[in-house]
Image (spheres, one colour):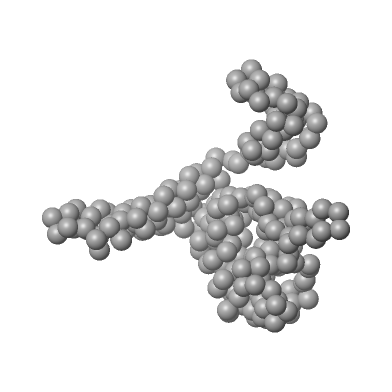
Length: 247
């Protein structure tokens, strides 16, 4: 079982345990497991662990590139050659790494087919596909509510008494959500199902960020259904797929 540390810490505080030691942590984890009974999730196999490591490293290289490029514009002329050389090196390493990722996906049984299914959806590209394959192995195994909650795009109520607050998303897998955001942004402009859905929400007065979050969830639910049923992208099949969205 993989548990969010914040959730366990909040559980400890609810029990009145504010101190933190290894022995206390062990007892709190045992009590948490007994009381909450979180779902057992299968461990990633060696190939999935390899893909996860490669995707994580790709993210790190991109982060370094993002930091170095603005520095080049602001650096003194004596420093620019060093930064330029570093950027060139990072770009070469990134290209090599992406080639390794592509080869691993296309030589692993089942992944090539799933990757093809996912990238057949307008708005879904390599980045979202590799993140889903490495970081969301539950895709296609859960229902729509479970997968949306797991990623953190299911709107949660925020009410008290007669007061009704704005529903919001919370928790989930941040890296998957980040990749899903960019895909949903593209889909809101080009996908024949997501684009009109986004436009309807905007027409109803929803803020763009709220509407885009709803598109993220709709896109994820579509992908989850496609993987579960091994069904290729078909706009006519998924257009009726709708659900309540957060305000």
